[in-house]
Image 1 (cartoon, rainbow, N blue to C red):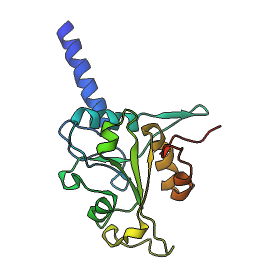
Image 2 (image 1 turned 90 degrees about the vertical axis):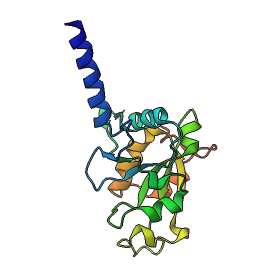
Image 3 (image 1 turned 120 degrees about the vertical axis):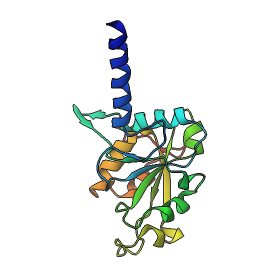
Length: 183
């Protein structure tokens, strides 16, 4: 009887981890829809830290009594291994709809705060919103870092065009990391 309760607990934990979009097998697992922005793993040095970062991003954040979630797809595809921001963008599939993504790189894995690289590639001409990611000019790729607890706010606001990428980028602290809006 005790053994079956323990086994059920382990199965429940595995389901929760899968629902959070992270898998120790490093397969691409989606949390929302196929059109959600991606969290892309480029550093494969520590599977446990990757899983931990996915859990931090998937955790709901509470603001004014309401829970908010990051609607993202976690991607642990080897084709992104070691890529820099621009190379990640041009490697995205043609049907990728967002003009931003999140990158879990070496700095994110090794930094105790796990600051995630936020990559924006909005058209600087204000017109080319239908271009394919591979056609993004290097000058249109911008980045900043954010704490995992801020990914929900960033994703939610960028996805509905409530806040511009530049507004988040201008709000980073002296250490270059976005830590949220001060109240």
